[in-house]
Picture (cartoon, rainbow, N blue to C red):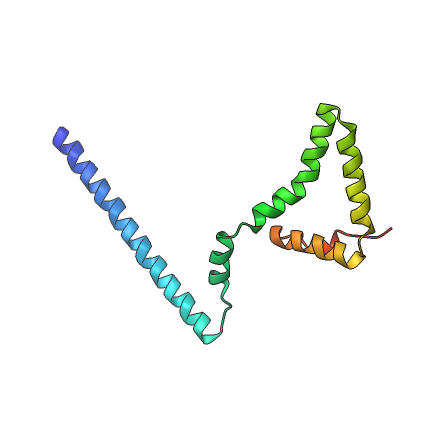
Length: 125
């Protein structure tokens, strides 16, 4: 019985190893075909752009930047500190007084990072 279980375990391990090797081979073939299409100009360098974006900290920076006013607002409510809320109101008043092109640019950049079309979000009254 133990021999049978050992044999089955070895067969399963060999099968998993074979599948991993096959997956690596297929991924290599796909990367080669993709590189050939990029060289011929059929597709853009999306793989290169995607790998560059994976090592970027801009998403985290923008998330902190956008979350900061909300975190400060939460702090002002729970700590009962009206000074923080008045400063946040002043911040948004000043932001509203910035030129419209800058507001649209800022929202578009934040939207582009997260895949949202920011220019559609801003509407003047």
